[in-house]
Image 1: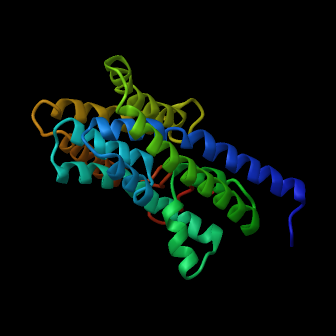
Image 2: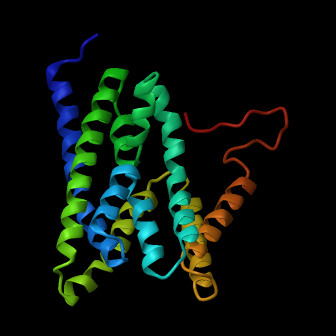
Length: 243
């Protein structure tokens, strides 16, 4: 059943708007990548093939701090594991098959997942995914080149200002997950503070990037050791969870 034109237009408008807005962050990545020692083409290839902003920032951030390639890749992979979880959810919702399924996996990131899962039905979900993914992919790669090329002519003041862009962007992404009314609010804040504390404590003694990996592993172990919320102490009882 074909959806009304107005509903489809709304989905496309939201997807394109989000993709264009978030895609502008590519300027910060391109500038940060070249400041970390990467060439313009290396920064561009990362955006083209990696295409997951947080992992890209983590990789160049570790390199800029003097970390080795293994620590940089490890930090990027650790942050990128969340996309696997997104993929499991979107594979059912989008119902792509064959090569379409493989190609779509490249666009499974925070933003495309957010706009896709809120739609009802496969048609609107696919439209939201494609409109947001294609727009964000195009803008992110174009602005990466612009940021990388432009960074070569930045003065010291603008170069120093770039140091605040990445942590500010991470904070903007993290904060909505910790606001009042979020599910498991108390547990989320404990995990966030504990992970940050571990990373900060290990920063003076470990090579750049390794503290992020250790903190991430510690958080994962803590999550596995925590009983499911709402689980019944009665072995014959049933646990209630979110729908």
